[in-house]
Length: 194
Image (cartoon, rainbow, N blue to C red; front, side, top):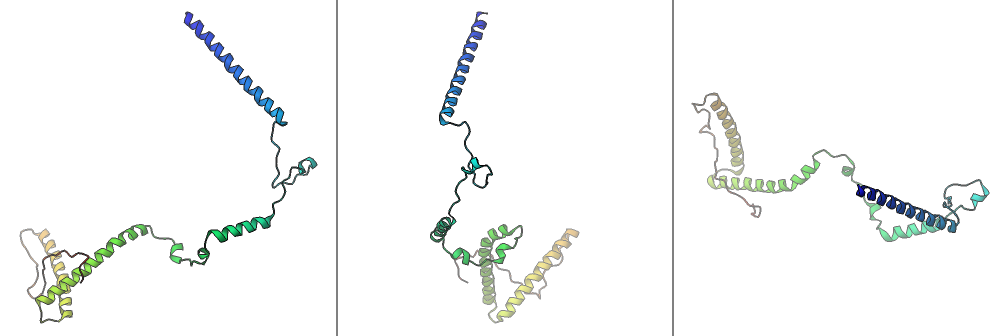
């Protein structure tokens, strides 16, 4: 039980010390404010014209606008080129864009590469057809090949439909009168010329 009494006594001493510190700080603050003369700062009127004569003495003088204008002109002349004003505004940048415009922009680079590869593959197919049929006309080979490719795709679609209906029989196919060229696949790099 003695420990409880000593704890209370120590708590009371601590409170007294804290109270003395607070009072000491307040005394020093009050002494400093009395030495400075005023407890509150004086207001400075920048955009208010007071009616009281005592307050009119505290109005700030109006700045000289010509000096400020000259400083601004110097900063503008030295800082940035005039080309910003002379730029034409593009109407495409002002108009709202579709939701997926950023996706299209990102895919555009990849599509350019794929377009090159597609063109090279088409040229290679036409060269192979020309090598196979040296006597035929180029335009005829291209149209026959594309027509045969379309008919082959159509017949394959019909085959898959008929196979799904009755799995046991194979029907459709390519007629012997159609000329369809089947070539082995060859990877074409972007560096090759066509």
